[in-house]
Image (cartoon, helix red, strand yellow):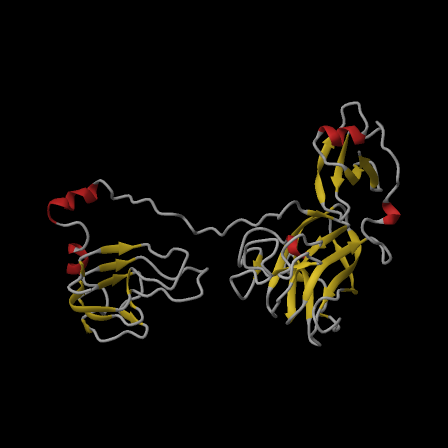
Length: 367
């Protein structure tokens, strides 16, 4: 590589999301005669989602042989960035140079093309990715599976200190999800369940929930740790509803899970967001149960009647899985709830259903 000229370019609105980049980026030795001159670099900066720099002229590892001169900057970082660069010549790259800005970009017989493309469309990243339930909002009382945190991504529905799923199971974003009782040594295939693991203090996960009425809930969690200092706390709509919950060591491998009492929380009717905040490192968390009574298990034995529901005063029923997760609503058309579930495509199995006039959830089997 030699005698390469990167001159008189008009470059702007780059790296709107990502980082470790720049309008002009180079690597390695350019031999002799190479130039980066009289470029107009403007309207860019590191995004609020980035965790590394965005540099103006970015001479990365081993970059050498360039003359970097008379480059103009506005609404952007200025100067020349270098990361273990080699030998190069730098002159007059301090800030905005009006003559350079005016001459950069389309030139000569092509300059009139700018009139036709003056409104260059730009992606709008001003609003964050919307937060939404992973499947459906958890309807209380509920068993909140830790791995079913909301969609939305880093900084929106979760915060994780590394960018990869270190457990390599269940989901493909930055949260570390581990498989439970899987058939392979990597713990990713035919797993009987999942948990959030590899946690560090300061990380958090959020869950959209629906509370049918003002109520007090008894909270338990299924957890594992080989540490003596693991802990977490719960927040609702960014307000703490528990103290820090210390988690005792369960074994030395993180493979033994135990239920612990978290205490009680009082929630108002309506839609809320629960945040699971890790306050002490190295906690694996399988699920968090919000129950109507201290001895209740989900599916709640006190609230379940093993009966067939025939047509009655109800015209519609909300349908839940046996973990308490909301699955949808069925409208009755002069038939039993069982037949309505079949008509709406529910698979064989047992479901919990609750109508607006029922205080109790009722168990229905689809055959």
